[in-house]
Length: 177
Ligand SMILES: Cc1cc2nc3c(=O)[nH]c(=O)nc-3n(C[C@H](O)[C@H](O)[C@H](O)COP(=O)(O)O)c2cc1C
Image (cartoon, rainbow, N blue to C red):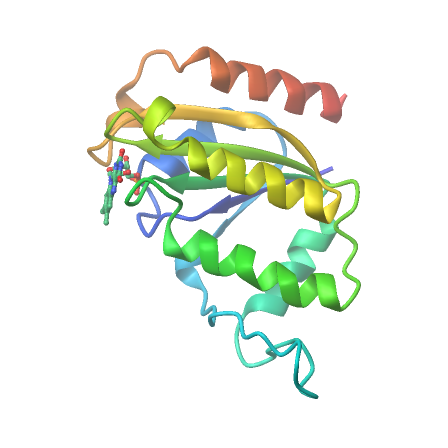
């Protein structure tokens, strides 16, 4: 089944996108660049009569593609030791879907993190946020691959990727078999 790669970087051909491409080489996948889409901040309508949804942007269209995938790779550069705003806004909106009984359960999530300043130790909060969100939504978190890179072609220039990338690829391949 086609894997969905969601790139949370505004650089559509930068390190995160390239890492996703390298992770998924020769596997069936399609990419969504969040930067190509309009996404509004989530609203909290819980204590109002307004439905918990916003049909004025691209979110529901993106979730149609999300619904079709079982294996979903989220990729983000590190911004201020967290995920990018693009990915955070997208994940915040999962609350709309949750409220409207979207079927998150059973999806497998993989996380790619790329940062310049020791992301392995300084950006662990991204993994925690995604892992806890998966637990809450009953998705199966499959792990994180973290890569140190800064210039837009750094990942492209790497002869070899860290073991964590190969580990995620092995899991993806097992699920494709
Ligand atoms: C606004 C901004 C904030 C950043 N903050 C961090 C940071 O806190 N920690 C870090 O390791 N790298 C930080 N970086 C560097 C990026 O994570 C790094 O350049 C990454 O390789 C970019 O990935 P991309 O090419 O996919 O966009 C920041 C970059 C930008 C533009």
